[in-house]
Amino acid sequence: MYISYDYYRVFYYVARYGNVSQAARLLLNNQPNLTRTIKKLEAELGCPLFSRSRKGMKLTPEGEHLFEHIRIAMEHISAGEAEITEQRSLQSGTVYIAASEVALRCMLLPVLKKYRLLYPGIHIRISNHSTPQAISALKEGTADIAVVTTPTVQAASLTETLVKPITEVAVCSPYFTALTGRQVSLADLVHFPLISLGKDTKSFAFFSGLFTEHGLPYQPDIEAFTADQILPMVQADLGVGFVPEEFLQDSSGVCKIDLKESIPKRHIALIKRKEQPLSVAARELVHMILEQSESDALAV
Image (cartoon, rainbow, N blue to C red; front, top):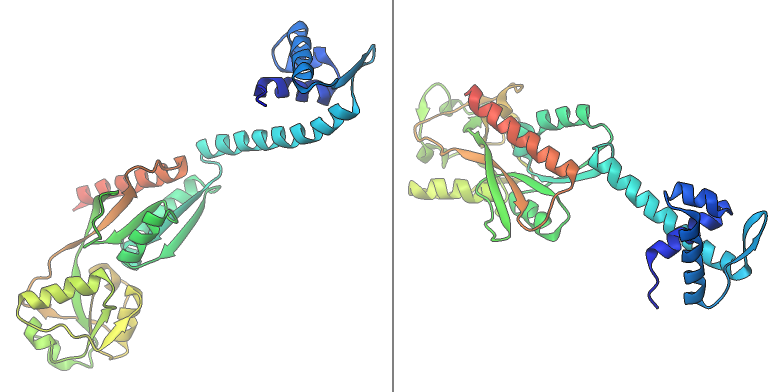
């Protein structure tokens, strides 16, 4: 059985207020139209829904039973409309971000601070991932956007925008005196314990490729789970690590190694699904990330 939603909408308002005239005013309609609609609905269902009197419209037992179902449906529809309206005005909603530690510290944090000040009603959910994990979360639909470091995982279903270059440096603690106060090469570093992210990360692949280009093995002694673990390990005299230069701003007990070879720049990339439209809240965050990217580029 197919019955027009408009029939049920009229029924709901007449039943709620018990008066056709009042329902007509609320629906911006007229009384004869609503009366005809009620009669059509009763004919479709094959039973009377109201008993009519001078005092107004009173639901029959069948009408009361139907009203309980229609009331719940109408309240859900109204709640859905209100939620969409709030989200469109950025008063509520949730943005899910898959981010690497480097992207979070070197790009996202100031953007998220500004975003929260402008839109305090929006919930932000950040999952800390390696680049491959973040891409997987994006493909699976558990993240709206991914903000990670290159190299990334290419996929036809995704779009990638480079938003900030990252300069990485080799670092050690003062304990490794042979690596400080002079220029050293990658060949020198292989004789010292190396600290790296795990083999399943793109960072490992990047530095492995860098060493291989110079005919050197890349065999880290320690593998960290996240990028922010590398610097404390270096400070604890555990070995040599590679970190973004921005990580050194508030650090102590770390020496930047004067490396002969240049480390190719990597980038922070913003990745989205091609075919999946973003919510208003997520689109606004993307806009602010791109805006920050342009601002950073002009400041260089």
